[in-house]
Amino acid sequence: MNTKFKILSIILSLAVITFFSSCGEDINKPEINDLEVGLDNSLVAYIGADLHVEAEIVAEGRIDKITVDIHKEDGSGEEIEEVWDEFSGLKNTTFHKHIDIPEGTTAGEYHFHLYVTDQEGNQSSVEKDISIEDLVDDEAPELSVTSSPTNGQSFSDGQSITIAGHVEDNIALGGMIVALVYESDNISDEDVAGDNDKVVVMLHTHDFDDPDETDFSASINVGAAKDNNIEPANIEGNNAWKSGNYYILVKAVDAGGNWVYSEHYPIVVNL
Image 1 (spheres, one colour):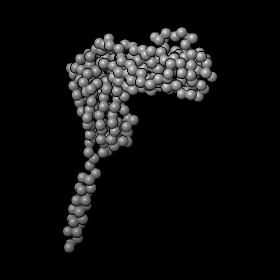
Image 2 (spheres, rainbow, N blue to C red):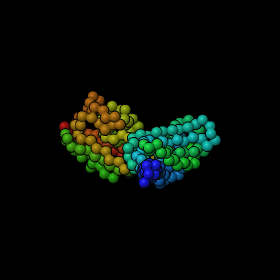
Image 3 (cartoon, rainbow, N blue to C red):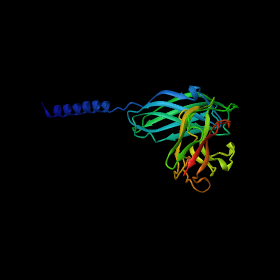
Image 4 (cartoon, helix red, strand yellow):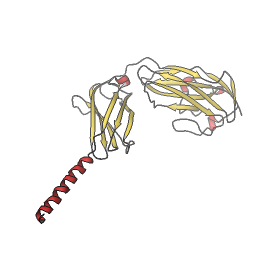
């Protein structure tokens, strides 16, 4: 075999090896499956509420970022965009988010786009036609308590006070609070809130896995140093622990501002 033929054979061999190696390294684009947009996949969002979005994502090249873009169908300037990098590095995940539709958004027809970009630079997207509508709702959420202390049950230092139940709404929940109220403070149900420093917050949230319903369980230990507010606060001063008659109140609000209140669940604290 002469030298030229040997060199040509080596070049061809390297080319074949390079070709098959590069084919073996091809990374498939991310997959977006089972996309849901809106409650029960209704493809409807409400102004001043949030839009439920869920999808199953598989990314062979590992997720870099996920983007949602919502813009008007007629091409006008209104646009809602959110980007998440918290899934970076994952090969698969369930993407489940609630996207705020700001007050002042114009009602109408919109395009919804979900983009997944992987760490290899590949990008996949899916799109849906959705409508954004004014929220017209005068129906309050429904609230049920499934577990609570017995009437007048006594609790001592260190014991756990717990209440649980279920709340749901015809459109979307806006928030809920469970609070322990000292009876002698004479606080109206309307004034029981996360920023009222006279109550002990057992649960306070505006974030729900299912935007229209949730099971809840709220508890706190007698004598606890901090409450369970969205940002836990010290239990001291106006709401400091003391012996006497308390009651538990559960209240919830929907995205339209309609409230529901539980009955009072009386307990006694003995320090």
